[in-house]
Image (cartoon, rainbow, N blue to C red; front, side, top):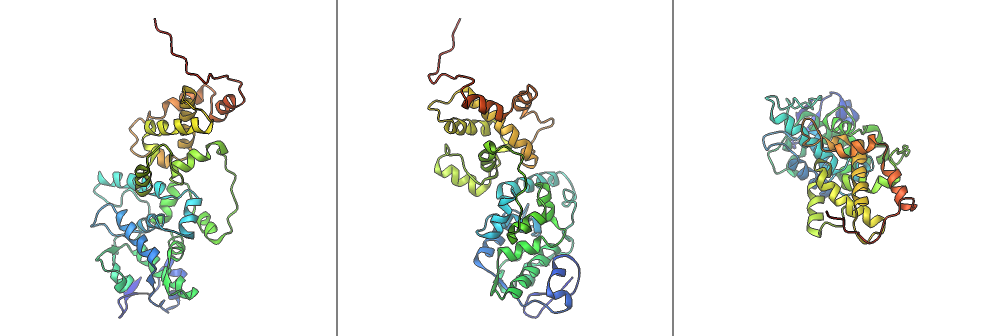
Length: 332
């Protein structure tokens, strides 16, 4: 719960969640703290992640905004796989589901206190020159971020303050992470520098493919302007498998030092994209038809006993000789 202060901010009066993590729960309101320039950018990116101009900014939008920032908060999310590409893909899927329903909140399990919206200026004061509305949970998170900054003696609140506040209660930001198979505890440990590296069951040979899917790296075959566009928009390659296989084929040839792209590289690309997509169903499921047959090729190869590691080993240890000179196929 909040009440309007004379300076235009929000004073916490109790409640649970992020607000409960601040000194305000004891009846003492945190002093108003403006966002730093990095966080101003986060708020702008959060608006861009909204489904529509009339929808309030929620904690899920603030979380997505952090992935566009610089610094420890973005790195903590990205280290766990919560990149801009991943979060925006899940948000788009939720928006698509909500678009065919009368209840705009039907795609979420958490309400985010969307029925109790708060004006952005009531929370951010004069630092917000827009008439945005915030969900109750988003307002609490911003207020809690200010309290974090006050305790640290910071003049303004930053991305790390905001991320900690978002992770402090059950809201749509935490639900969005969960949809990506990520826990708030894991992100918080990354932010604190106490994370213990979990066992990665994905072969290291496919880490590069995974990083390109998550937007941590780019496909070198793309021209500069397309790489910039992919990075800015967070294109999800898993939603267009044929295009993804095409790009990955050239990467596989490059990694093997081949001067000419061959069918063996196509085979590796099909297996690579299939196995990485299986580990990231929240990405592979975007725009998926019913039934989803887009990864049938990789699935059939797997059923035949083939996997990426086996085929890669066969090609690199010369147990399957491949001619460096393409041989024309015979015609009848």
